[in-house]
Length: 79
Image (spheres, rainbow, N blue to C red):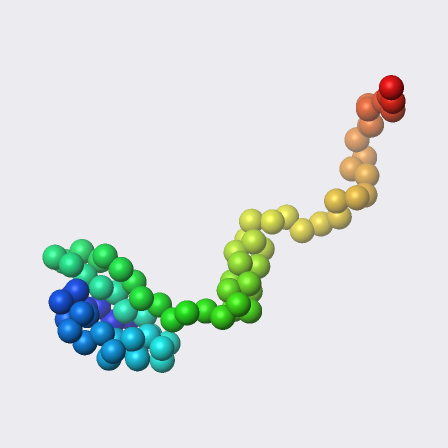
């Protein structure tokens, strides 16, 4: 990951955008603090796959239709 000052980033923008296009991440600093991160754009497929990977960490995969072995206490009441 390349780290640059905002003034240098402005002065050499085409050079840094070429690096980002090649796959590198550039972090822009102002007064010693990070203010932006320029990352390569992801295509639609890569973006969707990234979201699926994130969901796999949160989701519980299993059978949602099978009975759990608990008694069913709901009644069928229609007006």
